Length: 237
Image (cartoon, rainbow, N blue to C red):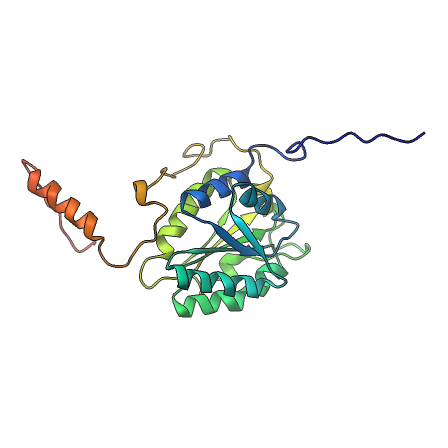
């Protein structure tokens, strides 16, 4: 007797929405159109959701080439570029290209796969810890271990990568987090400290190191029209 296999509905194999859909939503909010990388077992869901969100995935045979391409794209477009690689050798293959982006002042957002937190520094297959590996070749690196961190950290990465001098930023997406159901609020809520469209209509636009003439004019108008203006100035200490 021949066994008849039923067609599995799209999305049935994975939770919908999932943590990776939050990653894709955050990238779309910041105007990402293309992502460069190499697929891997730990990040398959993330790559799927990036593609489902309408972002074009350009796949390479080597992670180093993907990050180099992202850096070139950021130079040409004058905006942050997104690259990705899976945990372990995927991240390791990207290090020299990330270092190049650091010295060249290129705003690359690198999304790295990560092992399950419970296995940290144990003898498991292909671990990599970006906060150790990338400490001196990024503006900063962070490990995302809860779904409530995703959007806030991605927004901060886009902002900080464009501060002069521009620098790459690495976000480690741990496997445990990627497989965690969304909707479970963290200490600061479902999406933590994330603020939707934190720059308003300019959220998806690149940040120039100098003052935006339109924003300066708007600030002057607000001061001019104010009935009781107050200027709070200091040196930041």
